[in-house]
Length: 130
Ligand SMILES: Nc1ncnc2c1ncn2[C@@H]1O[C@H](COP(=O)(O)OP(=O)(O)O)[C@@H](O)[C@H]1O
Ligand SMILES: [Mg+2]
Image 1: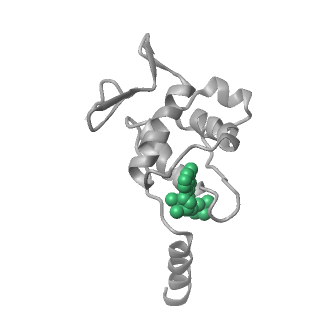
Image 2: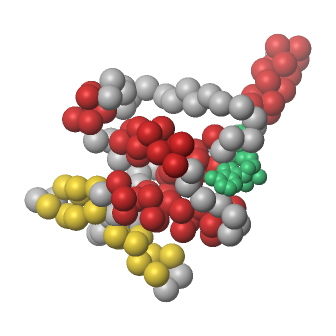
Image 3: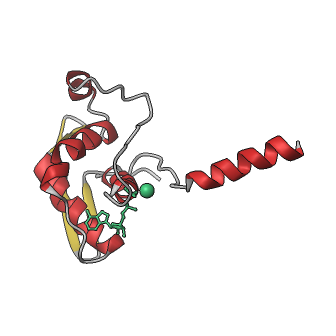
């Protein structure tokens, strides 16, 4: 299915516009993305979800990576074709952010978030039994 306006996201009766369409390209507005992410975060994780000011710089980088803004990626020394290593203390919100960010790019193929322990189990299983 082709999504005609991937920069306009509808949640219930509310529409969130993440940017402007110009010559077949979306010019994303980080402020608008933040408004959407906070609303979607509350829907997914509960009303206490909020975007923390101290996470703004990392959130900006993640957004640039997800929307594949190649120009800004290169300015920020991000390789859009590589994976992400997101580190931080347990409970600081890494998993929540990685579950949330695919929603800003509904036109792209998403991914599943799986516990690393499943990968470890799988690895051990293969090593022992195959
Ligand atoms: N931005 C946030 N605002 C409010 N609660 C949050 C936020 N991010 C995460 N949480 C809550 O904190 C807990 C841990 O979050 P999680 O994303 O699993 O952290 P991590 O993956 O970094 O260990 C979860 O219960 C989650 O709902
Ligand atoms: Mg986690």
